[in-house]
Length: 437
Image (cartoon, rainbow, N blue to C red; front, side, top):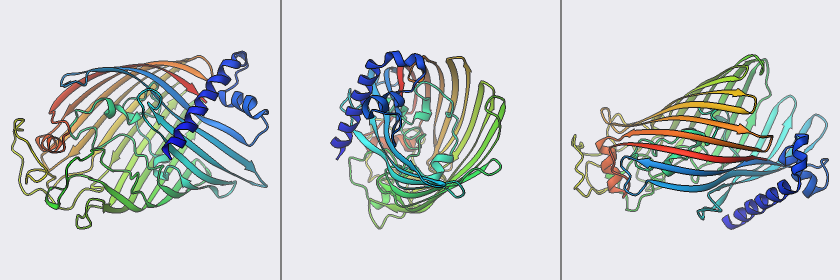
């Protein structure tokens, strides 16, 4: 099935490139790539079909203190491409959307996967209803500090851990992007009344793409005594909600304040006898704007979501023993009382002057493994992006990453054939091109 999605993405990319090559003269008219594709492929602007999404071609250079072979330079192609079919009735709209996401699919043999597939109905008085594979209400209402960051998007992209995997529990365990769009759900988004809007969603089973699933891939068996944070745990019957208030004008002072929450039953995929905490997490954030200046603030607390209820039976020594071969059966491996699933603090600022936008962001994540053991990550981002027209833009971005992993995280990392690095620093430089559809 993945090959089908990959082929769809590949054909859309080729079509996009062909349309772009044939219609350079239309750029002067200010047309979007979606308008060009509809005219060239579908023969008319008056059609229920439209395209959406973007493509990023990025060259990346990374240098780390604890490199161990991870100093690297590479190129990647990432993007989201969607096809929408929509119609209108008397006081309502309806349609369907299907989208694929590709991550280095044409350069590093990555796979294109289905990102969205849902039907929807829009009513003037009651709002929008979606049924299928789409983001939750909490995802749509969450505000993180990267909302207005340009370029690759810093830590807010959710992908820095791919290039920087020596964090031993600080970046990888917490993550910066909650995405369960591959789980089927029902979603309702209200119209905006006096600046207020709300949303609700229900997901019966998010086994394949739950919000707080660990990204560690275990290579050894797991038993009850050594169960660690979120090992193949997932959520059932997840209810999410969000509420937002917006005030002001886009070309003057404006503000948006939002709160979102996730609530669901925690289940363990490792063993029915392993009990994990239910999902209970929230996000609060705000966006302030004044003409061409924007600032966004965000805080996310994942609580104890999907953490095991059983703890390790022994404490870790203050000094990590790098010469020791830790295993999951060791009594030191695992969480202790006081552990949590992670907290994220973020801020992002951006300023736009004509076609140039510059931005800066700061992200901090903290994951506790016990009352007095924690791993942290700090990421600072600077970026500039120049947009030639509605379609093409270029950018440059610099990220500085600093992580500090506690002894318990390092021992667990070594037991799972992962990184056992304590403190690490990394410099990441990216240049790229964006194509907006």
